[in-house]
Each structure stands twice: as structure tokens, then as C-alpha cells.
Image (cartoon, rainbow, N blue to C red; front, side, top):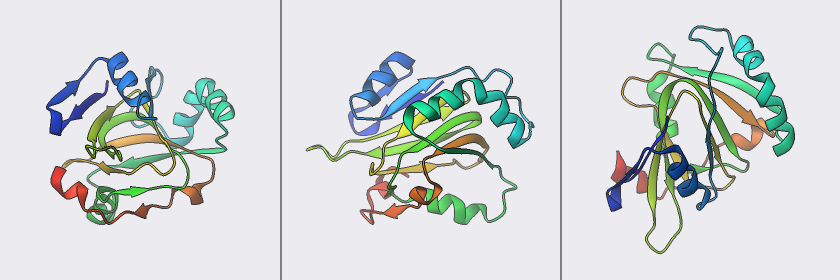
Length: 173
């Protein structure tokens, strides 16, 4: 289950309903789904097939056309470079949708409000997060990365990061 933190206001939410309402008010979709048959060590194809009953209708309803599986572990080649790429604030020209199958990761958001609100959502197995296009964010794999997630796209070219160069992420490392 997710944990939401707003470090500048000393807020932490663990109730899924409260997290969903907080994120929804900021245009971000969150829900928790049972992982069910998606077990550690399954092939990418098996993970996608086990998710098909909800994944296919979700994609059709929201106009997404393709899905794949990403896995990151301490053994992932070029891990420091991959981690650094995710740690810089950026946007995408389309939604970034992730369903966490195993492991966890920390999505940080920077919303343009008078307070320049920054908050983080730690996602784990069963968490589905939709980061809308053009939303400023970054992702922290953590010091001991272990994550398997389904990535859902309209077009993979839309997932190219557009870095903001704001440096705001440096305050939250």
C-alpha cells in the first residue's frame, strides 16, 4: 500500500482513500488493485497475461495502446545512470502510468501552486499511479532498487523525459 508524504507541511497519509482524494485533487489518479497471481519471478509475458482481465479494459477506457514490464534490481546494467536519469525533475508529453507488481519506488511531484507544493508517493505492489502529461515529477528507485512494474503507454515516444532544470529535486534527496 502507498504512503504519501508532504515533507514541507509534515504530513503523512497511509489510508488509501485519503491518498486517492489528495492525489485526485491534484489531477493524479491512484488506486490499489490486488496483485493476485502476479508472483515474483514470473516472465514479463506471464505478468501481462495475469493482468489482462483489468489491464485491457483500463487501457481501452483511457486510450492507452501498449503495455510492457520493467524490472530494476541491483544487478541491472548501468544502474547508476538509470537511477540518475529518473532522479531529475521532468515531464512527459503523455501520461506516465505504472502498476507496481513487486518492490517499491518513490514518485515525487512538484505542483505549480503559490506554495510550490512538493509531495511524494511511495508505491508498492498493487499500486496503480497515473501521472498526467506535463506534470513535473521525478522517481527515486531507492538505495537498494527492486521493482517490477507494468508500464502503460499511448505511444512510447511520449514517454521521453523533458527535463525542467529547476533543481527543486535537490532539496528532497
